[in-house]
Amino acid sequence: MAELGFKPMEEFDVAGKRVLLRVDINSPIDPNTKKIVNTNRIDKSLPTIEWLLDHGAKLALIAHQGDTLDYQNLIPLAEHAEKLTEKLGRKVDYIDDVCGPAAQEHVKNLDEGKGILLGNLRYLCEEISTFENAVKLKPEEMLDTFLVRSLAPLFDLYVNDAFAAAHRNAPSMVAFQELLPSAAGPLFFNEVSALTKVLKTPVHPSVYVLGGAKISDAFGMMEQVLASGAADKILACGVTGAVMLIASGVNLGAATDKFLADRSLDVFIEPARTYLKEYPGRIIVPKDLAYEENGQRSEIDVADLPKEELFMDLGEKTIKMFEEEIAAAGMVFVNGPAGVFEKDIFEKGTRRVWEAIVSAPGYTVVGGGDSVNAAAKFTDLKDYSYVCTAGGAMVRFLSGKKLPLIAAMEKAGKE
Image 1 (cartoon, rainbow, N blue to C red):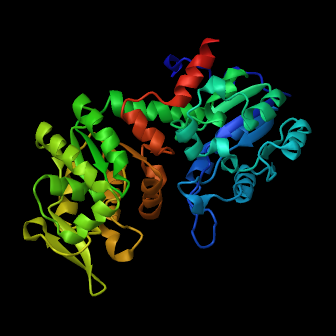
Image 2 (image 1 turned 45 degrees about the horizontal axis):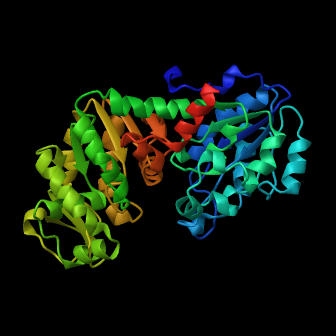
Image 3 (image 1 turned 180 degrees about the vertical axis):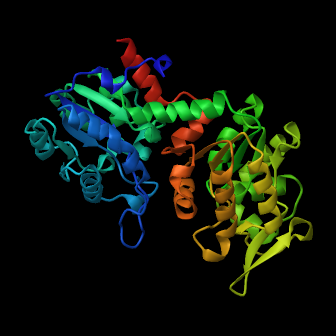
């Protein structure tokens, strides 16, 4: 990926140097125990950390967990350090201080081949999404932020391996490149390589499975991949499937209408009508849906709607139709589960679709937090061609938008 215009970390001599490594190990958290339930992002970061430590770096890691938008996940990074220590087979220290005097002192006293994880970046107001959206600083305007002015003078090299946060215009992501020699880690290159293949050189027929409840992700990339031919077909499931059905003229019922309106998701109905009209036959909508009745799973044909229920999964006819499309695909990209797979009676659609994807002969990519959780629950992650750590960054990349991190790294590569 030399065409990206910035250097890989392997080109730098890091022995005895203080290296600041930005990783994305933001992990799904059990709402009751506050413990990590999936370590995919931690696992993907291990080779980068290991290489830097093996080559004698004095390594400090910075990372985030949670945000104002998902405050329930805003917790200290102590367990993350424990997981890193366990998986690396060597001690990764932790201090619950992001960049204050205690953190600075620990960084100054680092030995070669030793690492420390600093406190949760999101404890700093300048690192949260509401700050980013309200203040809108340029990278060169971030040099006086507490994080940058506190840490930048201590380091010889900045390495970013946090592609999953590449859409974030935050100091930890785009400002250190203004002051320090900067490099990308191998995960960064792997993510960009896999997504570039999906977007630029898809193996046809190319099938996108777009589901889940966060339909802004699906609609963020849909027009780009349809117009460019990156996607030959889109299998619409989850809330995306419901919106597409309504846009096609199906009355699902007042319960679904209220669900969408309460969450301001009805704004996607009009764009959905446009896509169905402009790309006929390329967006495949469900034939039947599943709902709960007296504690049991029931299914109903779309032709028999409306019904005053919330539809939580695909029906059997749709599942079989999707399985056939996936089996014939040269490439499958999936973002968003087919239904509310967390409930046993509604796991069928997601499980069967995911099993079809890992059995497919084509190139398969899964991305997004809920998608990876579902993939890990029903299949072996090793059976996919590539598991992307990114969610929002992946969507924006596939939408053809320039990501703040890539822009910052390209600028640093020219200096």
